[in-house]
Image (cartoon, helix red, strand yellow):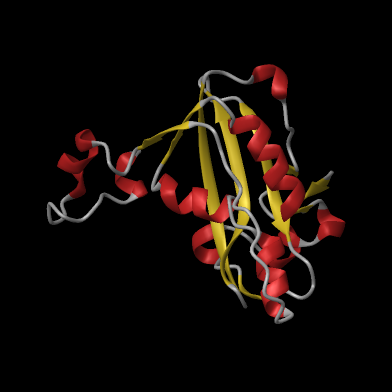
Length: 170
């Protein structure tokens, strides 16, 4: 376990014994040579207890261009496996297990799900110019997206067609 810049021991969990039917997820992203990637994922239960919280690392063939620390809170040291960051494939397998058959709540959850369901193996093969179709990762769950919840739109102070940002949903 390592301590990161904000003094939280990472990674946390997974604590399967505190799973509830409804859980919330939040993902922080970073920029890479293959696009936006998952940099940190946090999962809490219905009571706000942390089930899983970890930084994510990737193979050296994927160049992390920018961790967007000012926005995401992710620093380069945080995604170092020597500091406790977990490989994407392990994080993904844990999330498949934790999210299965649950009601998963998140803000702009479609973006988070695209990041955690990415088929990294396929991307790595494309980097090597190997053409191969690999089955997508399937998550069996129900979504609730706070960004699409009409109750938050009254606070958005934005055009009706634009979704509210997370900072106004607190």
